[in-house]
Length: 497
Image 1 (cartoon, one colour):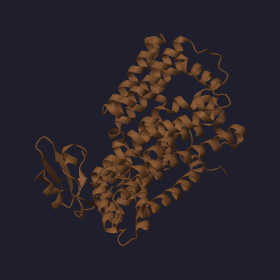
Image 2 (tube, one colour):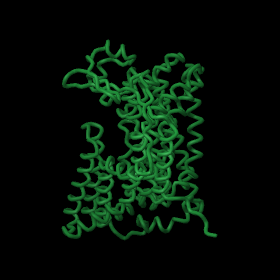
Image 3 (cartoon, one colour):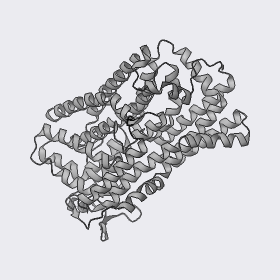
Image 4 (cartoon, one colour):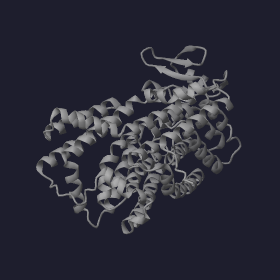
């Protein structure tokens, strides 16, 4: 009898989509009314399933709707998305998602996530051009020789820098660009692909989990909760430092074990295949010429420009994708690649990441089924009632696990904030704790589950590295347990300080 193989990422997501479609038959459909601000007319729109009502944009209107948020949070455009109005949940006519809706969901998901899909494909094209030039090979060989005996520095730097990006401006989807670049460097340092994956993905996850000035997480959630975003900032910063330290030590411990004995690698059976795929550059004879240096500088500047644009210029996927497309063309010109060969190489590079793009689309399709089935608000309504009568410590930890569970259905941090905060934040008042405790539980809960959340970015990341979800779980679950226990202790202590 043949040994059963763990299913691919695409199959896992299709199974999850089927289960979500089934949930729309079991969970009642329902919706909160929502409130959005119309800047051009300086009015509010109250939206429900039957009608849209125009209301004056005043603090009195917000108070009457039991929304404890200062008016300037809307007028200053700190809150741009519609928020849920407390105490307005209504059950609606069931929107059961049948077989046809299930079959359509991956296609709808691919269409809705076209922006990030195009970013991934263009990055694939850029990587194909870079590999063709030979600059990667020469640069990685030089770096491997430079770091000889101190390869652990690579783990510290990559994890720390990406965690900083995560905590400041929500570096997450953008990390897709780093895998094809950094995996060969980690392989050259005698580590396995899991170490590269962990340094990037865990760095991003711990950074966004402990967001400090991240506008897509801590700031938008604080605004939607009606408090200043600096409230609770010190605690989140301490959590960031300690959490990142735990993650770096965990990765280094595994990495050193693999370096000492490659058979200890969780993906040892894939060693040759992964090295062949990403190129084993440890014995490269290519020298780092001035032309190669210039190409690598242009390549590096693509990421510098992308990060600056996202953090300072309000850029998003269209602008990021354009940066990588322009970078590809410039590198092709510098490397003197002929036009016909450039196009062929670029298209082949994009094709190598097509599987990743499809995974992103199928994952978005799961969210489409939930939205069309109108079950997200129902889940929020029932979970918000769980905390009634709890003591402080139990409340904080219950919120942690509630947000972990909700993030399976709502993996977007900004979407989670505007949907849940007007409902969840006032619960803290009744328990006698600050609303920042709900902000922290939201961030930590979503962040912890992000390490393994199949509807988030992990399956797409694993597809680039060619590592199975089961092997990732084997590697990361001890760390998730350590961080969960640590987070519960921090939350419990924080409510009694």
